[in-house]
Length: 279
Image 1 (cartoon, rainbow, N blue to C red):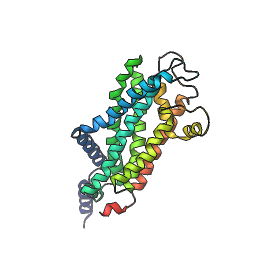
Image 2: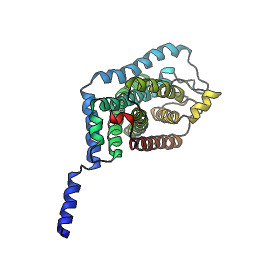
Image 3: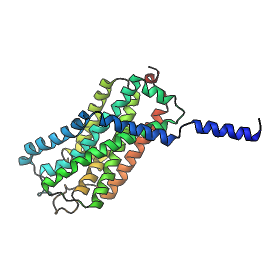
Image 4: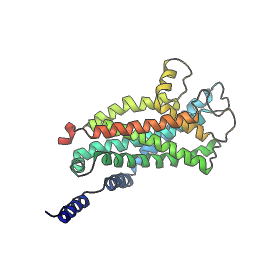
């Protein structure tokens, strides 16, 4: 075969293979379309955290007191954790769709396509992270009830912090869903891992000392919650922040590293064959 023939054959072969970023974008778009067609997911992802915020705020409010933050009510304290809970629920719902895709045969079709596995992970995680971010931002105006006023720069920073948390939690859910072939097993794992991870992040209560305080310090989600808390209290009077919060720089660094590590773990797991891939 001539040199020109080799070149034309190579060009034809490369053009026949879909670009990885195009595949990732298509999978991301599919997640968004699927979400629009399932409006009940909005009620589950936003309604339950919002209900928790209202009920717990009313129930714990009269007895809540935090030394060093006397001007902080429980509803204000719990609001950042509520936003992260929205992200958590959306990440779980998005990740479980991976098991449904495997059962329906869609995942097997994606796996045999001539695209790298990182494109599959990126598309699924990007779609879930965008949905989690949008739903969390929908709840932000509820903070006006206790005087929350954010400028454009703070809203942009808050969106970026929530996006990093969305990527981290969605990638974590992807990693677990990739190894499981049962939605019941996935829910059990998430209930035993992700929900306690959120509760022990300083979102629900602040541990000042003891084993729980130690766990909060090593829990990567704690720094995301603290970062959201710092951004939401921008411009608010002194006493609006619980004592002992990590600095803003630490929150950004740990949350960014958390998201990057979870993405790497998800990609590495996706490169391994699982028993569910053959079903």
